[in-house]
Amino acid sequence: MDSLRQRLKSALSNSPQSFYARALLEDSRTEIVGDLESALILNKAIDLGVIHGPRLVEGTIEALDEGVEILASAPLPGLPSGWEWGRGVFMALEDRAALHAWQEKASASVVQLDETKLALAPAPLRPLLEEALQRGYATCALAESQPVSFASAYLHTETHFDISIDTLEPYRNRGFARMAAAGLIGSEPLKGLSPHWGALESNPASWRTGQSLGFRPAGHLWLACNHVQDSQENRLNEGAKPTAPHELI
Image (cartoon, rainbow, N blue to C red; front, side, top):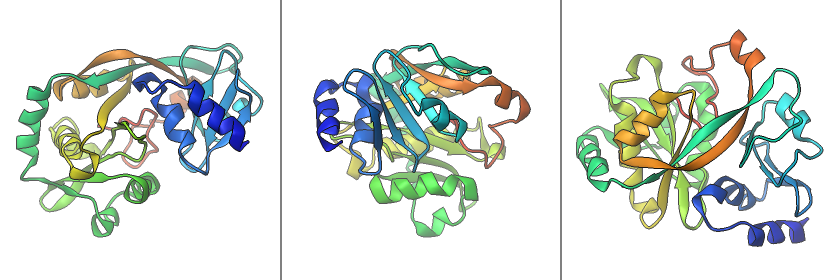
């Protein structure tokens, strides 16, 4: 398995489009099912998997049923009834002037996330925020001294990092997500790494937030979406588990 891990790392280009697979392969908890041609790169600790190759492999359907979110570079056949592929917009930072404007706004209200502020986050958000504290970095935007929006970089490689945003429902659409993200991008531990933003096309509020920070579309990824489940519950409620590419804003 370690040999397969190394071969997959070598097969994946060091590009933004390969980011999620490369980031998972850096985590020792990640399992690999399949072979160099088609593999499921699966990390149940953060409920995220990536399909490498042209087909779904053994274990993919079971992982979906267990609540793991699966990403792929193209919509692949074989999803169970009720599931479809949703297209996501992959965005790279191009307009630094737009980012700097939001970093100036963030300077007075965005701080590094620590254990004290983590304890004030909704319980369902804490596991991924703990990941960020242990394996990456996180910031939070404050309102009346309370954290109301959380930006984290728990997925990263030696060259790139992904921005995950979670904002409490009463504070959405008020600029807190933009400030938290802007503060994260400017943080010292992440300097030298290239940030990117992922958002489902079905969530225009998220990709518009990315655009306002200076991100521009650079490609697409696909996410397996359970429309039966999504029709039964509102996953954007406060405290709900965020949908990859992690976009509660």
